[in-house]
Image (cartoon, rainbow, N blue to C red; front, side):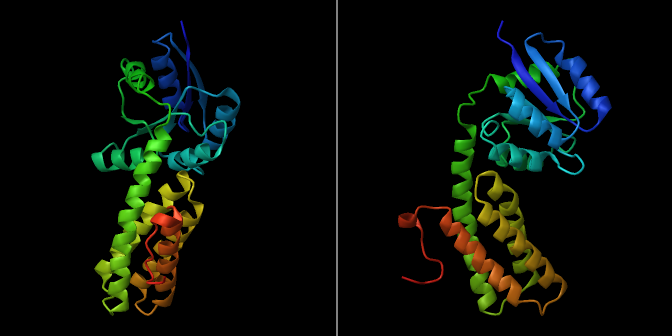
Length: 238
């Protein structure tokens, strides 16, 4: 029988214990547990699990941050990750999948069926899930760039409404997390700066220069995400 090595990363000891008992009901699994993202990263790199069961809400390094670090390591970049979360609404599930998870399991879960739930993700093709998700992310970046360019034109025309600034902030927030996961650290950093600038201007209407500069930098970084031959010039330069 081929064993499936499963790494569980969860800060709550009670949940780790329940998961250990639940997974033990299926002898195909070999389980290891970690109490933090930092510990999980080390074990994942050394043990090379077939799948990682990852809690979303953890102190210091949460689930999405742990996933981002996993994706930067050569030994861990392609390990399929399934998130476990108490916030399993459709929007949150979509967000977690967009970060690169192959699946999401809701808390509270049924211990009697947890192993079977994990098996459904193990049996799915996982040869290159990150490549497919990265391609989908690049499509989203293109759409976000078009929307942000429209926001930029609105700002230039003096239409600095709270609605426009909030739209900019939301798109910047979305790009901040996903950009780093898919290898676009420059875009992630620029988007984080833009989100902070938009928030500052929402609080103080005179803080406009920082938003304009940060928005320009994000648009530059979106161009760098694509091959030069396919990249439109958002600034009107030839």
